[in-house]
Length: 126
Image 1 (cartoon, rainbow, N blue to C red):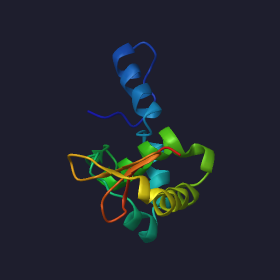
Image 2: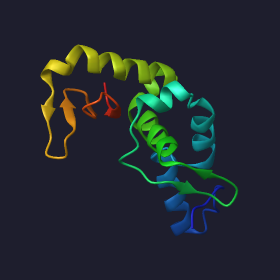
Image 3: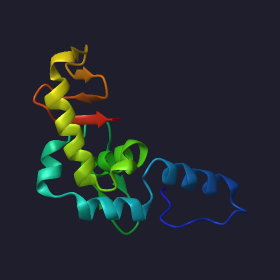
Image 4: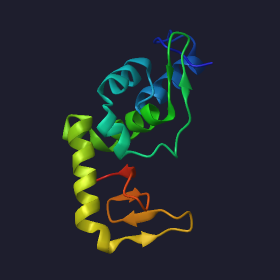
């Protein structure tokens, strides 16, 4: 069960799980904000292969929104918006593609990110 509220400190297990969700960008407010910010252009730029759908009692989020929320929260906050983060990741792919190494999974590993062979962002930590 996923919590969509801040649990009481007295329920240490639930609170710890909730805190882990916040740290990884998967609390309800973070996911709602990302869902609203994920324009068709942003959705087309990212690949959701590393995440699954996430469900709350009140709302469901597809794997791509979960992927965006996690990666933005973990690596992209310095860019302020998901739009700026996405553009930086796409620019990095264009400028560093010659340095790419093909992984056994068929992905391109660049110095600051992982991409599909078609240039979709899997993760970017630049």
